Image (cartoon, rainbow, N blue to C red; front, side, top):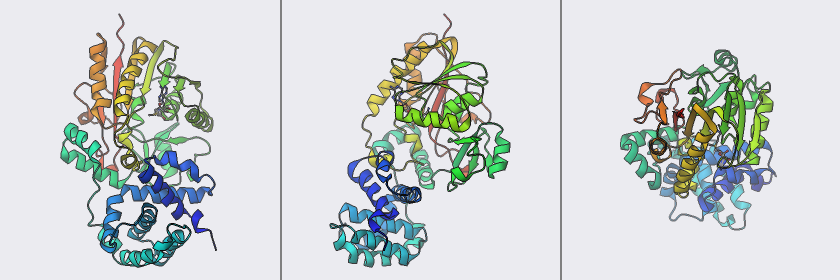
Length: 421
Ligand SMILES: C[S@@+](CC[C@H](N)C(=O)[O-])C[C@H]1O[C@@H](n2cnc3c(N)ncnc32)[C@H](O)[C@@H]1O
C-alpha cells in the first residue's frame, strides 16, 4: 500500500499548516517537499494553492457538518478534500485519500471516522454549493488601505480577480506573433502571449530552446517603457530571477543585473543560459553598488508583492502587513541611490508589484520633492490604456483590469528623467 504520509494530499496539508499555522509563505515552505517526486510536489502545490485561494469557502462547505473545528492538521486535510470535491473530484477516491492521510498521523488518527462522515456529506453537495459561496474578502490589514486608495467596488473587483487566479503569460525572445502561433496562445495588446493557466510550461514548444520565459503581462511593461534599448548600457537593479533582465538582453541592451540574493541570482543565470542571452551578473546590495553611469536604470524594488495575490494566494494568509513600513523606507533609499547611477539626462524606471500607493505613486511624488529638476516622462508603450495613467504621471495596474481577458498583476511603474544640470 502506498505511504499516505508522502502523498500529495498529505504534503498539501503540510503546506497549509506552514502557511496558516506558522505564517510562512508557500515559497518558504516548498523546499521541504524536495524528497517527493516532481509530479507529487506540483500536485501538492496545486492543492494547497487552490485551498488558500478559497479558504473561507471551503470552511463554509465543512462548517454545517462539524460540531466544532478539529485541530489544524485534521482541518487542513478536510479542507484539501473539500476543495477536490468542490472541483468535481470522485467522492470515493477523495474521501478515502483523506482518511488514509489522517490514519497516517498519531494525532490525526482519531479523526478518521469524522472525516469519512463529514466528507461524504460534503461530496453530496459541494459542487452545487460552491457556485453560491461568496467571493473571499482580503484581510482587514490590506482591505482597509486598498478601499481607501481605490474604493470598495474596485477592491471587490480585485477580490473576484484573486479568486479567478491568473492565466499563463509568456514573453517572447523574438516575435510574439510567431510564439503565439507555436504555443496556441493569444498576443495581448502590450505584446505578451497569453495561455490558459493549467499549461505545463516545460512541455511547450520552444521551452528548451529558450524562445520565451514566463512573465506576467503587467511585469513585462516596465522594460517596454524604456523604449528602444538596443546598444544602451542598462542597469537592472533588484534583478533576480531575471524576467526583466531577459527582456533587456533580448532587446539588445548591454545589461548589468544586480541582486542581493545569490540563490535568486542562480535562477537568473539559469534563465539567461536557457534563453541564450547574456548579462553581467553582480551579487551586491543595491544601496552599496557602484558602477555606471548607465544610460538607463530599471529599479524593481522589493515590496509587499500585494499585486501578485492572484498567483500567490498564500500571501494574505501568511502576512499581516508587518514589514511594509521598512520596505517603503528602503524603496525610497533605493530610488535615491538608483538616480546616482543613471547618467544626467538618462532614464530611471521605478516599479513595484504592489497595490499600495505608498509603494508606488507616493514614492514618485516624494522623489520629485527630494530631487529638484527630476521629471516624470509620459509612460509610452504599445497597448497602454490611457485610463491606467496615474495623477503624478506613472502607470497604475491592478488585477481587475482586463477582466474579460483574464486580468493582470497589480503593478506600479513610472519613467523618471534625471536632470542634466
Ligand atoms: C521584485 S523582486 C525582482 C524581480 C525581478 N526584477 C524580475 O523581473 O525577475 C525584488 C528583488 O530584490 C532583491 N533585493 C532585495 N533587497 C535588495 C537589496 N538591498 N539589494 C539588491 N537586491 C535586493 C531580492 O532578492 C529580489 O530578487
